[in-house]
Image (cartoon, rainbow, N blue to C red; front, side, top):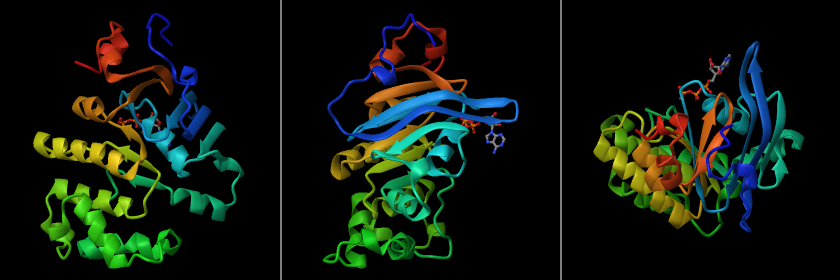
Length: 259
Ligand SMILES: Nc1ncnc2c1ncn2[C@@H]1O[C@H](COP(=O)(O)OP(=O)(O)OP(=O)(O)O)[C@@H](O)[C@H]1O
């Protein structure tokens, strides 16, 4: 880790705000490939934390450990004070409903209309529904929040790439997650559509009071959405700071990301 930088590291961050997500000393190897080498992070209530790192630096492996798609070799992952390794399957499933995902692969179901795509998670997680609000009201509200109410009866094939991503975000929001994980939310989109998604992410943060972990290579996205940025190098925290701090860093490893 570079010690010349006058930038805070995640374990030094002191905040009275609630910790939504805490990862400590996370390690994961595939044979001799040591991908995560003691990674740590703290995500506080209401903040957007951007994770940047070169291709192959372990970002996706970290997210997969977080959502249970991969088992870490060691380390601790706490979601809203609950250590996920100690939970039984049913408690883990309940906890996971507090987390929304917007992954590159989180595609819509092609054979369902937009409305049906949004109804799907609600039918699976009835416990997340408040008794006074009907399914159709929730679907309408979520679509309205992403500006796409008019697409409710369309099929995914009739939507543009940006619209699909916004509908996928509405599908995530419908369960009112406390934490949202975004993996490359603007990848593959043109600059104007990317800007719309980035602005939407900011608006959602304010409106839904979510805390988000955002993996991105998109500098505009990092600049607009982040309260803090964490740079991952070789599976361990390299440096952490605000966009203004990191983008003016003299460290060549950091500068490389902000060209
Ligand atoms: N299931 C797996 N089995 C073996 N090796 C894996 C597996 N998943 C990831 N790896 C290895 O872990 C390393 C980190 O991969 P990871 O996908 O986390 O990188 P990344 O930082 O997300 O990259 P990118 O920005 O390109 O998405 C790579 O060397 C990759 O080959």
